[in-house]
Length: 186
Image (cartoon, rainbow, N blue to C red; front, side, top):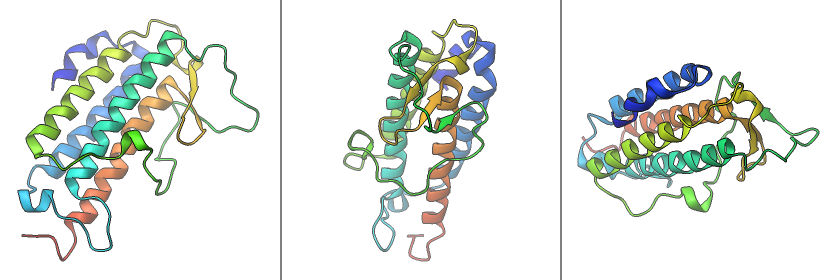
């Protein structure tokens, strides 16, 4: 993957979370590898996204994540304090913290695209995220904190990285559920 070129440049305090992100991506790619064109476009009964749309959503989410990371490292949130009573997710984030959410407008998948194109976009988004993370030169990534515009929860820099992985794992499970459908084209 292109993103791996910059891993050696990541701050040591980011590497464990980055390794987790990469492991989850490998699981996603392994999960969609055997999917046929008909399965890629199959919409489950009762509505919901097809596999192509789920993966496109992940591309949009990672692109958004890289923008958030850039702002956080640049210091855009340095003057903001975590409000009393707000949820703060840190390096200790050990699960996807949400149930089913409505995707914010910028994360809603666009028209269905073929798998090679979406996989290429995923790879570019991963490279961008790695590039943004490589800019961190501080002492403690847990000291950088910003709110999630969609939920109001707050995340540290490492918390954001862990959210990326847990979000992708959550949707990989969704894809596996679609693939287990008795109506899935064979």
